[in-house]
Amino acid sequence: MVLPVGVFQEELNKIRAEGLYKEERVIRSPQGVEIRTLESGTVLNSCANNYLGLANHPAIVEAAARALQDHGFGMASVRFICGTQDLHHELENTIAGFFQADDAILYTSCFDANTGLFETILGPEDAVIGDALNHASIIDGIRLCKGPSGRGTAEHYGVMNEIDITTSTLGKAMGGASGGFTAGRKPIIDLLRQRSRPYLFSNTLTPALAAAGIRAFHLVSEAGGLRERLRENTRYFREEIARAGFEIKPGEHPIVPVMLYEADLAQKMAADLLREGIYVVGFFYPVVPKGEARIRVQISAAHEKRHLDEALGAFIRVGRRLGAIR
Image (cartoon, rainbow, N blue to C red; front, side, top):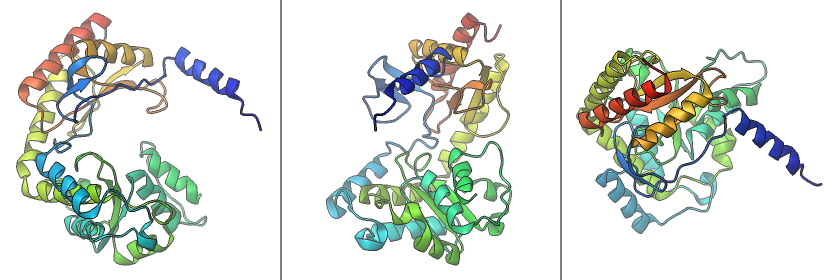
């Protein structure tokens, strides 16, 4: 069989012509508020999932380094063969306690956690009601079968005891590396251990990631000030970017979509902002629906007010220059 490389190239050319081609920028420093990039030098990072500023926290780095020494680099196995260490059980118990659940199960990503959940607990006879804005992993998982202390929406609305299953990630606020999990009633978690294909057929989470995850959960439980700082930073940036004349999606969360609608404009604005020393990325189809292009600003507890003001000033200058605001 000869692969139709010409067809693939035509598709790539079409993506470029439509202004939808995604470039990857190279970072030469640890993740943080100020990062060193290959192309643009030191810039202010306003697009990471590093919401609590833990990605390069010394305690998390130390926990990962210690695990490398004590538990090695990788497991070279899936969980049910010889891929389960004490660190994996400790992290699962920590997650279950944090979410007030019976048990928890680890995956190499939240994408795997979501796809592995639905194919295990649902069948062709089940109806699924989902939101159009669900993460791609939830949509794919369904297709395969046919708060104040940081515990999310359920805690915010006081319904934690009514939630049967929680899936989430270790790759964002909880240190920003990788890994996902499902927490819930013990029979559900036990069934996932027996039948969930991503769990059964993927190598286990590395010891360093497991140890870092344990430390991240302890830090989040102990350090309420991080969440308060994130809320205040988010409130300030949302108010000021709207005051400047930009249209943003409403909410209280630290993801601030600055709506531009046109993919070409989103890419130009992101490039101009980078030249101003602000690292953001334009989001456009297929990441968001066609005609809904935006720049997604992501606020961190590690941002200081001067960082936010610097970003706001650059947005205003570039926005006026490109006609996005008056």
